[in-house]
Length: 175
Image 1 (cartoon, helix red, strand yellow):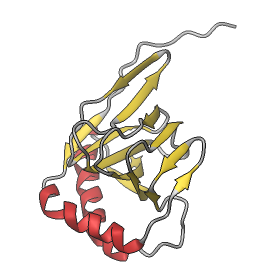
Image 2 (cartoon, rainbow, N blue to C red):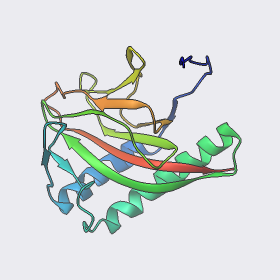
Image 3 (spheres, rainbow, N blue to C red):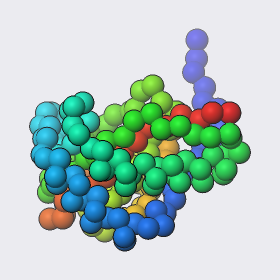
């Protein structure tokens, strides 16, 4: 049996959060109120995340983030000509200098999304791997990147003194 690869285009999407400058500091302050939950393993070195902490109270953060995610999902569903896109889950991650998240995928969802809340231009961006090729997407603070959840990706070590903050979320389309 042999394996062949079909030449089928697959898109990665970017949207801008229209009110990012107004909500950035509010998001960062809400995350600060929740506390610090670090994860330090061989695969991830993350200063602060609520991904592994299921009991974290984040109602005030929900009030800020959920409208951003909803607006993004409306824009993307129109672009893809599908009925709607539903949020599965979301979490935040903060990376101090030299923090990273090694290669991984997001199981059980169709799209993975990253809202870059605080990102220095020299800071780490998301890196993708397809077959033997690694690539980056030009991204700026205040943008959301959407890609198929099966895309292998990582957060490279943060080379900046600025803490990189992202809101990651998984979504599924309704056709």
